[in-house]
Image 1 (tube, rainbow, N blue to C red):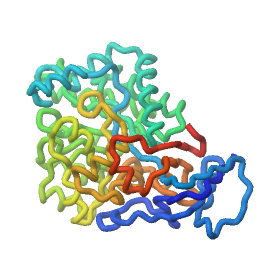
Image 2: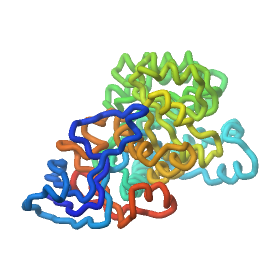
Image 3: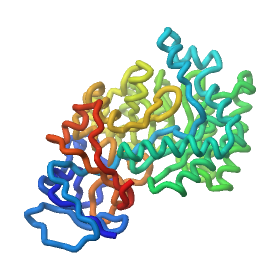
Length: 411
């Protein structure tokens, strides 16, 4: 199957070489071709260029994209979309003055979701999650990381990871699986958190590795959740089974979690709503990608990741949705990009780079996803007729996506 898209008003994120990450100053540039064409064969981008240089070629399907933009699909590197039910009552509780931490201390938050998930069958959990995945694909997400972490028992964590594996098999979108058993301390271990850490290390990680259910391991390194020492023990155990770290850190406090992540060569450190000069210094010259989650900040009314500090220091940044039932019940990456521009003062170019190439890097897949490059996967979206790509984040409440193609197939 070949698809030829002609008369593209502007083809965005065009790369003649396979760029896999963009740092600081590089993120200001978003290469594009105006009045362009794009040729897809099967699931691969094979050619693109200016219409002025176009030579007629055969294709099974020809699309006229006059007045429309074409760009890579979003690469959402941080989600929790496999969950049961919802937490709308906690939304009301926050409106009435309770903080996220106060709700968690009352047995809400992650523990609330864990109880619901433990009492939900695998098939029901799959059906709920599949619906969410279908919705985000329609909004332009073509690659997605999904974490466990709402199980908090061996059986429930395995159930989540098996659902993620089924989604990976059943859907065309690229799915990355991350084990996040260290998401919260279960009620039964409230007075013995180290006991739960031992369960993660001695029971969960070996079984997950045996069944090959995940390639990454994550920890919520935060006061009231997992300490630096506990996080380090979990990362060490994960590394012994070949699991690469990705860490939740600095959502509410900064106390050395980023340095710990860099020490263990974490692929990404995520949240970073709180950031110190020491954190910025340790991220320089590292291979670790900072990931900002602006729609989480929006929903919880907490600070936004100081993107300008990172970018001005020459550090890269990625954007992700943090889609989850408690702090970000939305996987709309279009809103994430807009919010990054409005609240984090990122330019449209920086935000699009952060949600495509750098998002792919934060999943370890930027060699095949995240840009318009010959030989990369044909994951693209076609906008409706819009005046410029600046209009995407500007008109934040509208749906500008007309069509999404994943692996060269319209969804």
